[in-house]
Length: 186
Figure 1 (cartoon, rainbow, N blue to C red):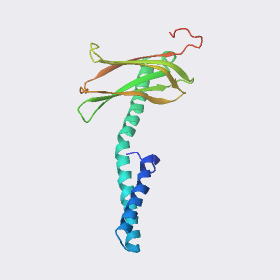
Figure 2 (figure 1 turned 135 degrees about the horizontal axis):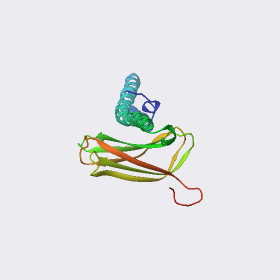
Figure 3 (figure 1 turned 45 degrees about the vertical axis):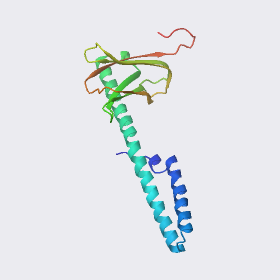
Figure 4 (figure 1 turned 90 degrees about the vertical axis):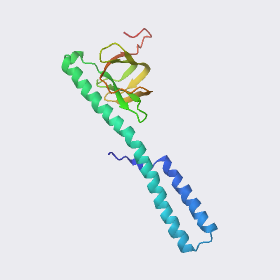
């Protein structure tokens, strides 16, 4: 479990003072004495903050897990490509697609791109996912105007599919830099 600052101080935590104020006003309107009102308002602050924080942590853990897994798998995928090709032929831009089972027995396809080169990249990235036999095209996406700084890795898109995908699949990608002269990219 990875904890981030945004889990403890987020936009959702702005609801805590509002709820505490409502509890405080309710205690005053109920005619409770000052000590009981302050004590109950303090406990309501603790309980509301704990509830919002717990909910935020649970919700954000899935996205953090997906990000961590995708970057790790993309790094391994790039290393595999470098091992198969000579260093000069290894691509600077790598696209990677991960399939995550959804709670509805569907598949969440997450598409990431990473710049493993030393120069910034601006251009088009096309990604095609095929089944293991290269017969059925499972997913095809093209992304225009992708900007990646050297060493940057980021999510390009996520797509939901109703069919479950736990079988092996193949990824094909092509990265074409934008042409500065306005001609078609190679």
